Image (cartoon, rainbow, N blue to C red):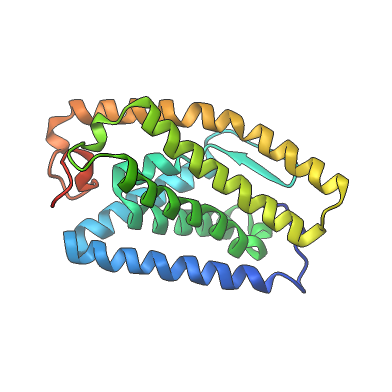
Length: 227
């Protein structure tokens, strides 16, 4: 997911630095909590894995420019369920940065917009998971309806933020609204695919008994919530 260069001009792009700073501060808050709960080795290990995966998502998986941005299979809900909110957030931010530094330097001016667009919906589904997944239900026992809800909210959040940046940068012209609608429609394919990926990955994790208790995965993946 890379917002089209020039969508927001230099005179307005300062807002993206503010939103990215806010998202980054909250990610650090989550990281501090994860550090207290699981220790530095667990946090660093999970963050390294998510960063590598995100980099691969952007560079290896199919993606297509559509309208005002690109359509990627980002698998944000998958990262959240497997590794937790803090490692997923930091991995998204670092993976996006590495991709920009080494393969797409023309995207670096849009980094603030892109990282905001990826992280804020992740924080939203982290909060949603706490509400819709029962405390006694490990993530490996998640059903399709819950996985669909998480994926839909995440992708809808991405589309919503891209739409915001497009309107902020180019206004409410018919042409701009049409390109936003084209991008949003294309993202429907991701909403259909991601829950199936989530369930497939969770099914593999459920059968891999040796993964239980490992510090490289989110505790809720195999265990009920600690009360």
